[in-house]
Amino acid sequence: MDKKIFVYTNGTEMSTNIEKILRKKLNKTGLRVFEEYDESTELIICIGGDGTLLRLVQDFNFPKTPIVGINTGHLGFFQEILPEKIDDFIFLYNQDRYSIQGLNGVTCCVKTDSSSSKHTALNEITVKGLLTHPVHLNISINNSFIERFSGDGICVASPAGSTAYNYALGGSIVDPRLNLLQVTPIAPMQNVAYRSFTSSILLPSNDKLTVIPCNNDDCNLSVIYDGMMTDYKNIKEISICLSRKKINLVRFDDYQFWEKVKSKFL
Image 1: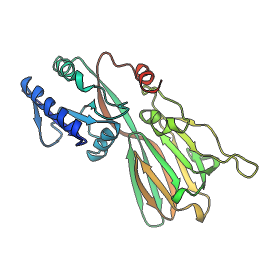
Image 2: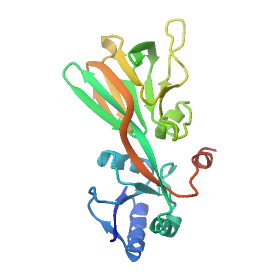
Image 3: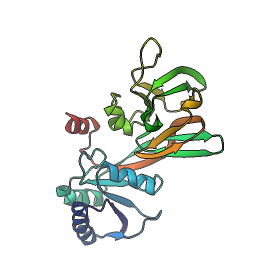
Image 4: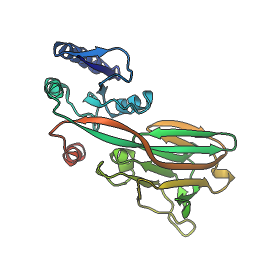
């Protein structure tokens, strides 16, 4: 039986041209491309950059179907295949010469005076003050108070997101085989009036981080999940933990995480 493939693209001219070439090559090898995604789909091919893959994850709510990326973007950290290597990819996929790498996301629950909302991101959840105002936040781990944070906000990243915004903030690169959360401060205040951690904190995968505004001036916050922002008023509590939701990326034999890190960042 033909394998069912769904192609997701960012719609740029380059990606559209690559999609046309890809479809012709797939059809010649018995891989059927369908116009709609459903749970019977056996592979999602994502054409674009890392931002395209993040949109795919949100659009299809962390699909269980394996995903492979063709990079037509800038960094392409998640994207496994270069456009000139499409023939190699099809051959290896048809030969079942690949493995699956599961990547968990990070999820948050935002409680306000009148509602409760949940967001899940593959890379990171960021909590900031509105209009770039500094905020003061009581931070607890597993209901144990840790610090009164003062600064622009915090970024809570999954291992997959350690090389994204977290890295730009000075956080650590984490091997995705380690299942943990990383909490990185954003412009923390450290002076005679305020004391905040100035380095990132690593938490075990089953720990929960709780953020409670210190006073009424800090109750209006922005929650950003993989670049998508929602502003909230009258926040009572934000709880953040590693999500049970995950995506499954197709990896081929020559994939090495630290080789990828070296090629993309050094």
